[in-house]
Image (cartoon, rainbow, N blue to C red):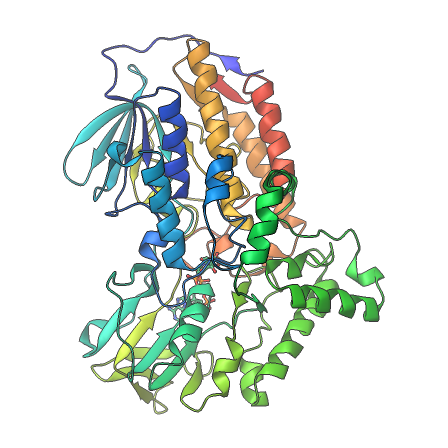
Length: 543
Ligand code: N01
């Protein structure tokens, strides 16, 4: 059972019942649910339109790595029947149109304030409300705040000495110009070879005059086999309820055959057959082929070597193929990429790879990028530099705000890593919910499945409070401690902590290295979350 503490809110009613931060897929659905239930709710959004990730990340080739029919809302059967997904994996413009369609279809825009960034939140424990201050100097009060701020929404922008001296154009994939960029016939340098880099490189290679890729760590990538979607969509339209039900209880939040077999106990021929099948199917299910791939170093190496062999088969120059083959971390311990002809790009004469382990970036000059050590410097001249250097994942957007709860800021509390109960609330910060927060499945899952579950869970909690005349909800410290320990223990059973990944916060200088998402699976997490709700919000203090 939850613990009840006594108290009543002092003072006048707040301006809003609920203030939601962010108008990405999470914020839009949250606003829709709240409006239907009669809450006075408003979204504050930094961008000038809805869409979140798909509003900002407009780089060439930006595309989802979960199939469209699954990376879509399930809450309204009519919506899912009426929307056409033209490709197996939707591209950014289509995803942005979908977000806009949802905002218009449910009349959400009237309750969204665009072009405004939340800067600070101050909790008033007498009035049981938050004061939310935005960058236009305005303050609003709200009984509850829901941070739908996204897991990969704050770009990581490493400092490259001399970047400001560069005479050409500079673009960050995470903030690509809305009017597009004409790269035709230009000499382009790309720094970063994660998902954003791979997609950009593949998309721009056919149009640029010269492409130089600066790689620090190669990525494992599985083929997307993207293409027209009529058949998949027709099948999905017949079976959406079953598809959604399956996804909600699955490990990953989308349809992916989970193997019960261990690789190390399966014959080599059968292992190969299974990988071949998954490779031919395409997509992220590759790493679910055997249940020990993420737990057993030997199994992992066999899976990794399978992918490296595929890279060798695609890249004509063996030396180059080796440079493009990851060897420094277990496969799937960094987010795998889903590609469409990425490795083949390097077979073209106008494309070259610079291995930053051999020649690190020294500085950037007016002409281009200088690499190498003293006496061995080399300048790569270019007209355009594209930076695909990633994000301050999971905690970045929350820590970017000054969130002051019971004295401390959230940033101070999370100095040694995020601490939450279920990834939904953090002790000391009452009435502040997070959608897909740290220590929930979030980035390890189909975000749509996880977003909908969290929004539904939070909405149900708010309804419970309202029905019981309660006004304050807070994670209990012991429940939070247990949950943090559980998530850490689960991660330690896997190979995930071995990688210097953004899951671990390792891409941000000074950030505590701790595995941030809950790795126990979407279905298991859902059962735990539902159990907590049924037990009158066990582990939360209600007042
Ligand atoms: O970012 P990343 P991303 N000098 O962190 C390199 C999702 N997403 O935007 O690995 C040189 O993966 C860095 O090198 P290293 C998806 O979940 C999805 O690509 O740190 N290089 C790495 O190569 C994904 O995982 C899609 O050694 C530097 C790259 O920059 C997540 O977003 C599409 C550097 C950053 O890769 C993040 O992907 C796009 C430096 N100083 C994104 N600093 C879909 O397909 C960093 N790097 C849905």
